[in-house]
Amino acid sequence: MASSVSGLASVQPANTPAPAPKAATQAPQSQAPQPQPSAEAQQPTDTVTLSETAQVLQLTQEGKTPSQIAAQLGIPLSTVNSDLQAATNATAQPATASAAAPLTGCSA
Image (cartoon, rainbow, N blue to C red; front, side, top):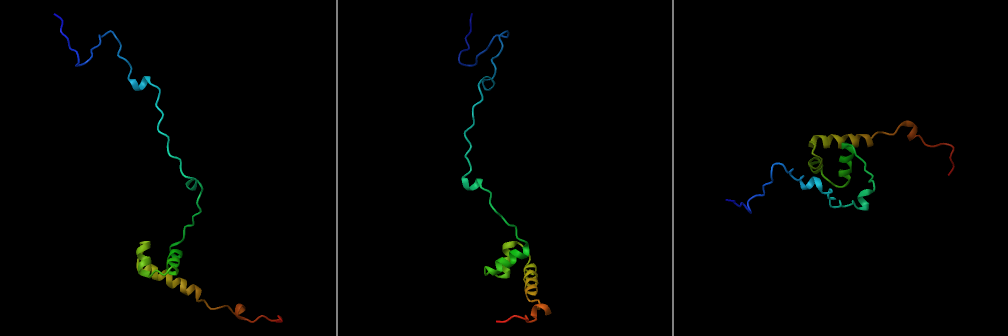
């Protein structure tokens, strides 16, 4: 009496080698093309990294308050005030005697 097992699973005789997995026998499929960066993204961009003090001074010139600068840069307010004080002292240095002396020998 022959029994039929159709539709459940295919059974191969033991002496027949199993077929290789389909992925191994098929040619590798090409991947979808990767999007190309725009021309703008391909060109190198010029960047300058400013020191913390330079950033503080730039933001001050833009009209930011010391509290706003501290929050934006993530630094203590005391650091902002120190940077501003140092910059004020550097620009308020008295002129040297040679620079303050009048030019002689020039006729106007």
